[in-house]
Image 1 (cartoon, helix red, strand yellow):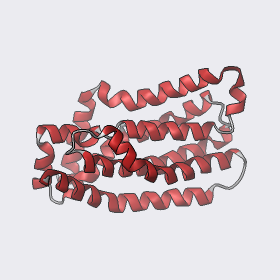
Image 2 (spheres, rainbow, N blue to C red):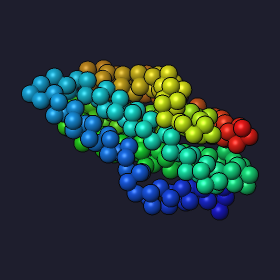
Image 3 (cartoon, rainbow, N blue to C red):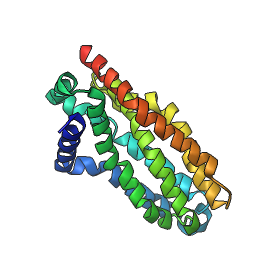
Image 4 (spheres, rainbow, N blue to C red):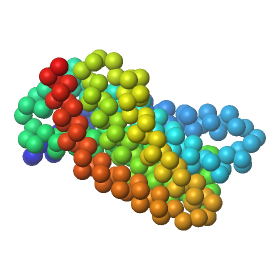
Length: 222
């Protein structure tokens, strides 16, 4: 089993065993959708047109909520240093960690998005576009957030610092993701937005593992 497979299995098992910690981002997403729905009360019909944008914003914050933990546990117990020393090549091990993280955050958000759309009265004809935008966009959120997490893992105080670092880079993903969904609600063609998201995804998958690996090596040196 290569670096990718070994790291994938290891992180998957650790995440499953962590239980409630792994569920926090999804719990936040579900509760935020419900609270938002209860908060608007009798005006529920008015939120339908922008409900997909609300879902996208909550998906963004759910991803951000889980970012600090992506490398923190491995840094604290020393296994991160061992991965950087022994994984060959390192970028494949990093990619495996990102895949596992996205599987327990972004992928679950994608699967829950039809239910969230129903609660927020998003038109059914735009749900397919909403799910597609989340499928393309949430891995980009994970990739961007991982760079911030890698840069701050050695400081011991990620949290707000990660948010400050990555939020400006999250904004374009939010614009195109929510824009595509809202465009679909209006009955217009969302192809341009989807192509931009696909381009961001391709760039993230190609470049981010190398950037994150280098950032982690720097964090170990200092």
